[in-house]
Structures are given as structure tokens and as C-alpha cells.
Image: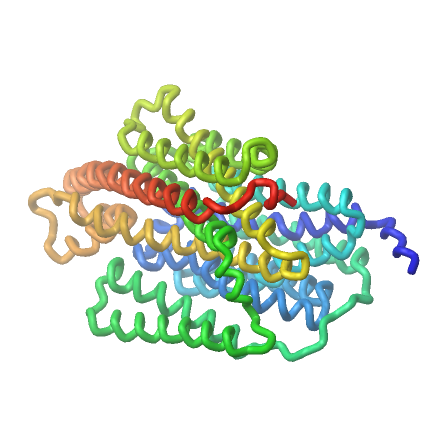
Length: 506
């Protein structure tokens, strides 16, 4: 049978789906520098701020696999167009949300739209580019857009906040969707090959509820100080639902998530690397954004500019990782990148950000490059260890690892910051007792309390908060460095019997 002629509009299709993908990636990080402004404008508590930020990646992590399988059943074009519509509407709702609960609801809608867009973009690229060389170029361009979008998110957020209100970080998505939606409508083929079968919506619901309940238990137990009994019940329910999801996957003839892939050491190592590296990058960016604005009194734009080294280096990590892996092997590159990340985190933990000099930008660039190379190495490990017919399932696992890592990273970093901040905060004499607990929750809450006090007491409280957050920053980055060091050892062991030439980058 003669091969099908390539689509003459294929590069326009690629441009359209990359534009559709860009806002989804930007929304992962664009809020990091907006946290202080948003917290003050909405009078949001520390727990609400954490939910505003990480409900998006956490919910998307639970939705990616179900939406990918749904797209296989009804067609990528239909799901993509629906996702773009939802994402545009949710962006407008988020921009004008009057309070934190409504903003959290809008972020949930954004996650639904984003989860419909992401798997369809990859599916459309794979179907549009049948030539392997062209497909490799297309996937490389897609990966560059993803890395660059996530990296420049804080800078774009800072630039917008320098001229507009906090809702502008969401409203910017609306004109993009207004262009991309009609472009995809006209460019994408209306006839698609779809996979017959039943879409297991029940399995999707179990996974999403289990994940959110488990994370809520972590937040409620440490961040919001809920009673131990409530935490235990929610945590048990969450873990029970996740266990049920695993049982359903193991018993199903056509599982939504092929858990058998975890039996392969390279894939297991790749998933762990994806979760920890993406979580560390998201958590560190969030921590730095708060310290730069709350402690060093920088504007959102200045904070974004300060973090340019970590963003620029992260955008370069993908191509560098592919070249290094081909030359030195996956195991060496993966372990070295994680070891460098651990070293830079330890260096940042003992560095004075008030006088950054050259060392802080160099360390930030080293961290961004190392974590980006680690993320690409995880992709090479996962996709290289999967057979051709398992590429879709492996890709879903990889994307889920990234989103879950970002959500868990923000959650755990946020909880850690809250606990350590309370431990180091020394409240000035004379502060009203009724406000002490609120001020000790987070540095954002502390600023809200300072507004209610007199000028002298307010300044004393802010000074105490800055000192406590600086100590928290050091403890957090030191702990992250230790975790990264342990991950280096684990990956070294898991990839011990993996031949470098058996794992080729896409």
C-alpha cells in the first residue's frame, strides 16, 4: 500500500497546536511571582494560596490519562477544540474572580481545559507527521515551547503585574485562545481514526478524588491545623481510593493506566526523576518569588528578572541533555544532573540574597540547567524503555509525573515553609494575641495582620517575618538538596543494568 501523502498544511497545524499548548504551560508557573500581590488583593489565607496555585497541576495530573483515552475514543480534534473553549472561558472567570474560593474554582476549570489540550497536542503531532525525521523536528519544537513557556512564566507574570492588576496573568490567555481556536477549527482534519471501546469514566473519577483527598489531608494536617481525626479520615479515604484505582487497573483487560510499566527499572527511575525534578523546580521558584518580594521588597517584575538565569538555563536543558546522553550515556547524565542540582540547592541555602553578586545568578543557572537536563533524561529513560506500541501509555505516565510533581512540589514546599516559618517567627511584644496564630501561618498572612496594626507594631512584625522567612529559606533549600542527593543514589542503582545505547532520545 502506498504511503499517505504528507499534509501540505502540517507545519501550520504544528504552529496552531504549539500556540494552543503554550498558555497551558505558562499557567504552571506564571502565578509564582503573582502570589504576594494576589494574596494581599484577595486577603487569601496560606491554605487558599496553596490551593490556588497547585489545584491546577494536581487536578490536571489526575485528568491527563482519562482525557487522553477519551481523545482516542472520540477524536483529538473534538477534544482539543472543547479544551480550548473551556480554557478561554476559565481564564476570563479567573481574571475577574472576586475572592479566593471562586479563583480556585476557575483554576479547576483551567485544569480541565488544559488536560484536554495537552494529550491532543501530542496525538495530533504524531498523526500529522508520519515521516520520522519531520516528526523528530516537530517534537523537538514542541518540547522547546514547553520548556521555554514554563521557564518564562514568572517573567511574563512580573511584567504584567508591573502595569496591570493580578487578573491580567489570566486574561492574557483569552486573546490567544481567540486566535488559536478558529485556526485549529479550520486547519485540523475532520476525519480521524478513533479507537473503539468503552471510556472508563469511573476509573478517572476514582483517581482524581483519591489524589485530591490525599493532598488535602497533607495540607489540612500541616498547613491548616485541622484536627488529627479529620486528617486521618480524609487521608485514609484518599489512600483507599488510590488503592482501589490500582486494583481496577490490575484487573481490567484494557486498563486506563498500564501499571505493568512500573516493573521496568528505567521507567520507574524516569517517573521518580520527573516527579522530584519538576516538583523541586516549581517549589524553588515559588519560594524564591516570595522571598524576593516579601523579604527583599522587589516588585513582581524585578523578581521575574532576578530569576531569568534559572529560566534561561532551563530552556536550554532539553537539547543539551539529548546531546550529552548520546555521548556519555543515560545513567551518567541523569546522575550527574541530579548531583549538580543537589550542589546548587545547597549553595543557594547558604547564600545571602541581599548581596547576590555573581554567585547567586550562577547557582540559579546551574540549578535550572541541571533540573531541565534531569527532566529530559527522565523522558529518555521512559520512552526508551517502552516498546513502540506502549509509547502512548508511557507518554501518559511521563506527563502525569510532570504535573503531579509540580503539584506535590508546591504542596510539600508550601507545607514545609509554613511549619518552619512558625518555628522561627519571634513575634514582637505587644502584638494582639488574637492575631498571633494568623500571622504565624505564613509570611503572606503576616503582612495581612501587619496592615491591622499601628505603623510601629506593623513594621516590627514585618521585620520579624522577614528574619523568619530567611531562616525558612535556608532550611528548605538544604532539605531539598539532601532529597536530591538521595534521588541521585536511587537513580544510579535503578539504571545500573541499563545500557546507554538501548535508550535513545526522541
